[in-house]
Length: 338
Image 1: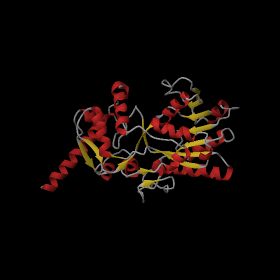
Image 2: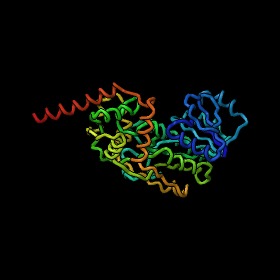
Image 3: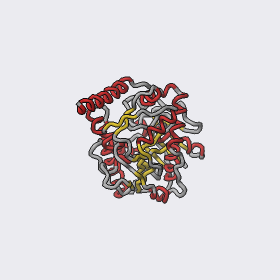
Image 4: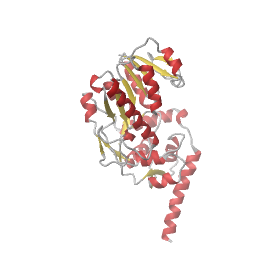
């Protein structure tokens, strides 16, 4: 198989890149080269900014692919560019959408590909929906060979998957745990969530590549494991070897007193209970199993981050904000008690 990834080094795509190269795929990565230092051997890099359409068109002139996948498209205009570049040059075009595009709030917590797409809380999700609409119109009217993939919360070894964190990443929450400071969990921590390790996501994704039954389809790829946010934070604390000191805060309150996009990231996504039905994926990719349990996967993540200080990016502003939110709650309790 000959494939081209636009991106190829992110949380989701890095595991796919690694597994494809192990399987002997002829894989090209089109990116700016800023994160290619750790690429496995065998990847063929086309160094370019995908936004420079004229340059990219010259670089891929005369080339054709079995699969082209864009991991960094977020708006329809970017896919209009992809269509101009790759129409007639690929047998399959894969767009990475998002499970946050599903109906929010849900009328049924069990999500299938038939769940309506609607998210009034998050522009990111509405943009993904618009991208899907554009591509499916091309498929219906022109036969453009589209496959849409919807990941949910996918993580790797480089970042701890959390619900509430600052703009500089998730390390500060782990640091608070290590210092026995209280850690904020949105809501009461009992809503249901799904964490998917990127190595498991990669298996499902690769199974859709070159799959004639996946053309014209939208497919979600997640683990079948369901965990609560309390269990998620407990697993992270356990991996760090500390006791969790949790403080539960309403998602609406967090949104109201923060400059972070908690309206989108929480109210439009993580504050909602979700359980994914992956029957369609398993029909298209027989034998698919996501076998990395979260408590096991997050231990790998914690171990890697502790061994790599460059991923321990501190966020003092977020740390102060956490203290202020927790102090405000305690003050409110005292005020009500009189």
